Image (cartoon, rainbow, N blue to C red; front, side, top):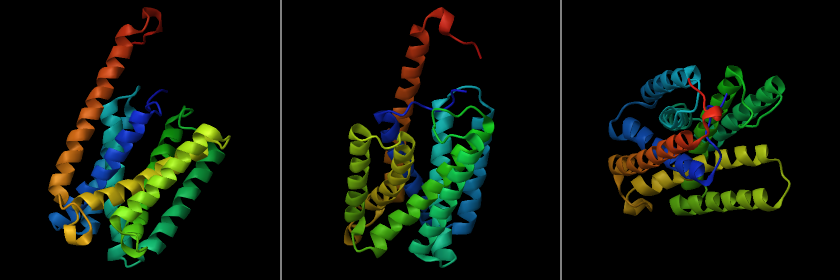
Length: 254
C-alpha cells in the first residue's frame, strides 16, 4: 500500500493550509451561517465518512482524495471542539485534556495492534483507519488548544501563533540534530500544526478590535481554498511527471 504522501516540506505547508481552512470553513458553517455546533458537526462528520470510505477503497495515492479527507477532519474537528467546549460547557482546557487522552489511547491501540506508528509503514486497511482516527482527534484537539491559547491564556491570536510556531521550530531542530524517534516527532508536528492553523485562522477572520486581520470567514476560506487548490494541482502535476519518467518495468497498472 502506498496511499499516503511523502513527508516533505510541501506536505507540511499543505497541512497548515488545510487545517487553517478547516478552522475558517468550520466557523463559516457554525457561526456565519448560524448552524448549531451539533448540526454542523453531524454534517461535517458525514462528509468525513464519505470521503474516508473513498480513500479506503482506493488502491494508490490520490492527492485530491487524500487532502479532502484531511480537510474533512479539520472542519469536523473545528465544530466538534466548539460543541464540546461551548455547547456542552466543558471549556477549552477540559476539552483539550479529553482529546489528548483520546489521541493517546488511539495511538496506544494502534501501536499494540499494528506494531508500528510509522506513517510510512501502513500496510493494511486497519492501520489506515487508525491513521485517520488519530488525525481526526489531533485536529479536534488542535482547535481546542488553539482556542485556549487565543482566548484563555492571555497570549491572544498572534501570541498563540508565535508560541506554536516556536514549538514547531524546536521540533524541526530536534529532527535535524537529535536522535529522537521520527515517529514521535511526526505526531508532535502533526498535532502542533493544528493549533497553529486554528490560531492563524482566528488571526485571519477576527476583527481588528480583537487582534485579527478582519478578512472574515468567507474571505479567509476563499483565500485558503485557492492556495490549497494550487498546491494540490502542483502535487498532481509532480506525481504525473514522476510516473511518466519512471522506467517501464517499474510502472504499475491499476
